Image (cartoon, rainbow, N blue to C red):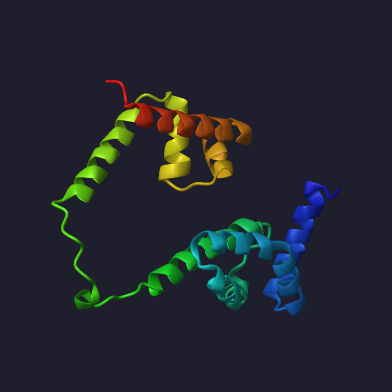
Length: 183
């Protein structure tokens, strides 16, 4: 097993090699950190575009290699860059649709709209019947879109605790909404 001191020394060496334009260092960096970068990009980008975005990230990383600081780990830098570029990619892919080509919705007297409002109200009311811990986990994972691991880190609790809270909360929400939320 690799010790933390060895990993830091290796990372520092890798940064120095990158700063001195050693292309094999870029290949090594991709081998070490490529999977984490791809994982981050996959969260945001369509599967067909993932490889292109990852390539852009490592190209940009290489272009700015002389700005790297010795002793700073590369993984957080690359994952943050991946998140930013994935979001940029989504913004550029915004599809513009001609309003005249969209068919008019079938008039149903606003029934769908009212049903959505009623359901949203029921969900909000049901959320109030969860424990504070469950509500906090649901907010982070379901509403804010964090992974369960990220929520666990933010809350300072084990991953299993977050998984259990979310699972129980969603089951309880389903029951409350199905049975009618008690007032």
